[in-house]
Image 1 (cartoon, one colour):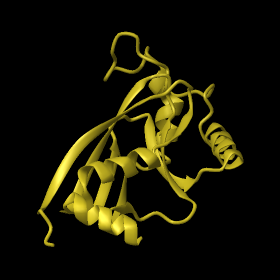
Image 2: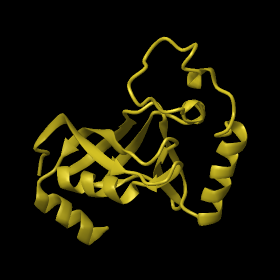
Image 3: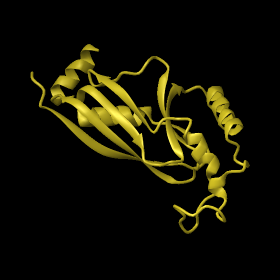
Image 4: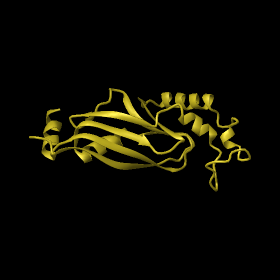
Length: 166
């Protein structure tokens, strides 16, 4: 059965974080979005819309996640001195209630703002231990990710047939 169409689709994924540094596993949400859109072959591009956040593909193992948090703290300590936080010198992009979050911007610069994940047979093409994390370094906020789906969409019956075979 031929594909319905080869097009691009977009949607937003909202995430609420509660901790100052939060590594949120979004893999299941991405898998659900791929299934919901009926993307068979192509890719999903995930992009954060915030300058104090990033994306990371790695293993979801609790001690590794602690190691990563400690690494980020060593590289850009929360209590460090950042020109971004000096509101006496800083003259651009200031808003009422501005947060002192220079450390969060520096940490986010260590990660990527987007990740592109292959989709084959309606399934994310991740390795055995790979998971996709949204990392918030200025947490306790509502965040938005942009999802872009590119590829070939299949009829629901084709996806069901693949699920039974695979």
